[in-house]
Image 1 (cartoon, rainbow, N blue to C red):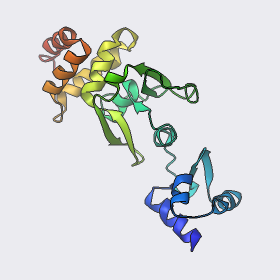
Image 2: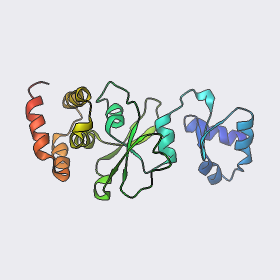
Image 3: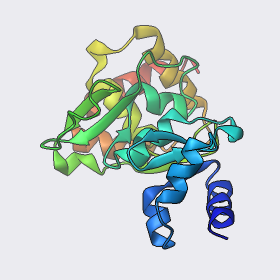
Image 4: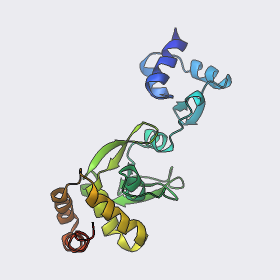
Length: 199
């Protein structure tokens, strides 16, 4: 019965189960240990397990499952929103200033932002593996790459804007609201003026 319940949870979660879920269902952790020993589960990280028969290992989902304060941003957010056709060399996340990111700073490129700006533009999208992750929305992501333009690849920067302006789901007014908050309104308007005629 317990094994069947575990397998049902794994199926519902697209191949994933956590120690927290096991505890919530009053299942002894010994069952997980036994499944790992039999090769039926792999330990991805502390408290997170994956069934290799699902063949959909999702690095983005696993990282965020382990470090819930990470919000995907910059190049990773561009990819998740379809605003770039290039996979980032290393995934990028944003956390608020003061958050201790030492446990995962070697796994991703970490940006820190003041707490007042941390929650602006948070949304959720599905990865190519079908798992939902937390990411900044398109408008916030565009503002971030404009704020950090000197560190952005010029080709990726330009294409991101062009892809964005072609999106039916774009929200220029939201982009302008964010730009005002981040103090980059003039830069955003200048880029919009130039690119509007090219798209």
